Length: 152
Image (cartoon, rainbow, N blue to C red; front, side, top):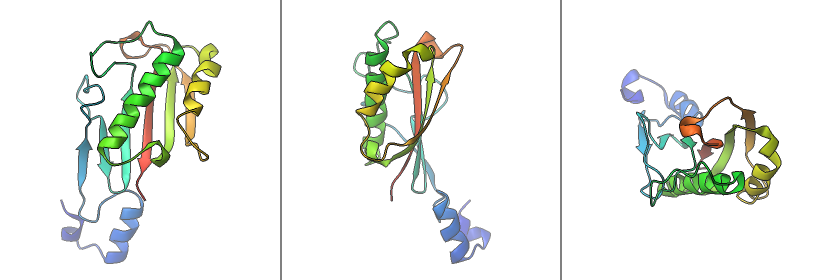
């Protein structure tokens, strides 16, 4: 339903827009052929207003569909971040638009190696981040990263 039809004032619509809702209530999926297709009932990303919510990416080569679960944590991290970059690009954004990430790792003993690769993807203002160790990830990979980006 469109927000204007709800009788919202211009100020109310502006306030909602600041939280990522379009004034007309539009929410849309974003997808890139340069990132792995979703392997379940979810979107690669969803845009709501100026905010893009990116689903977690795991180390799947988008060209071959090959799962890279036996690759090093550095290689897996690089592939995951490259896949996130591809989804961002599909919506006209870059890693500079990322404001928050969530990193899920099978083994936090590999944090330093992951962090060295991760740091090369972000500039002077890296995003806020949560990193947690989990018991298991989809397809038994070592890492999954999701992100939130904002287009000013």
